[in-house]
Length: 136
Ligand SMILES: [Ca+2]
Ligand SMILES: [Ca+2]
Ligand SMILES: [Ca+2]
Image (cartoon, rainbow, N blue to C red; front, side, top):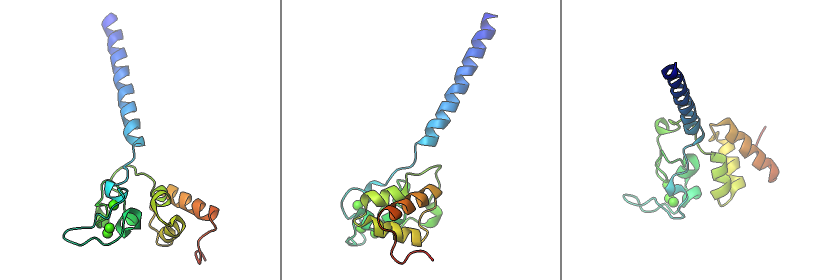
């Protein structure tokens, strides 16, 4: 009887551990690539710097995540291969020199793939005067 109870307890603990482990990996999104927030132009050799830093660099605006190539192009087939990602809209709002312009451009060119990003970007645009010439 004692051993059976111990077994039930340990399998219960194991199950809890697995659930917790899943929950933890589910809530740790892939973050922002160091090159897209380090304050310097990383687009050097073999190219000279392109003069664009972090969120001013098109490649970071498009795909600034840790599993991408920073200020270098991340091919579309390499994008969004993980489970969850940090908010692209938040990245634009926090790092772009002109967040409204960046957010509006991203909305216009359907850069956002996560519905939560579209909502966040739209809310930011609405709160800051809206997108010029945007919408039907
Ligand atoms: Ca950089
Ligand atoms: Ca650059
Ligand atoms: Ca670049």
